[in-house]
Length: 119
Image 1 (tube, rainbow, N blue to C red):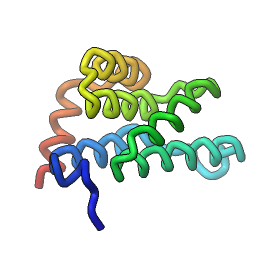
Image 2: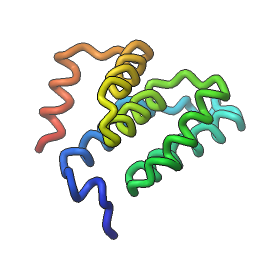
Image 3: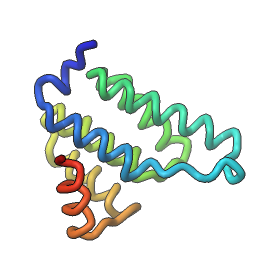
Image 4: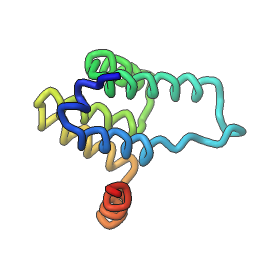
């Protein structure tokens, strides 16, 4: 299987995987509602589209989540990745800042996770 975006920038694969691990902490099964399961499915579909290089589909799904009122660091982070891939760095920064406001991480924590996953 060939992933065009990942093969151009192998470090990007690490960013996508880390973002999924850092921001995708689902509620326990007892706390989930059918709408949360639907939301998780849609966001997972957007991430899959992003991984396969289909930026338009990923963006459409993620913008749809914002219109549904979802305020998720994962959504904003991935919208930032899409903007970055398109070369719109000012929008990417704004999206990453929004993600950080929703789920702030200390520099040491980010650095520790990054170093731990470098192998």
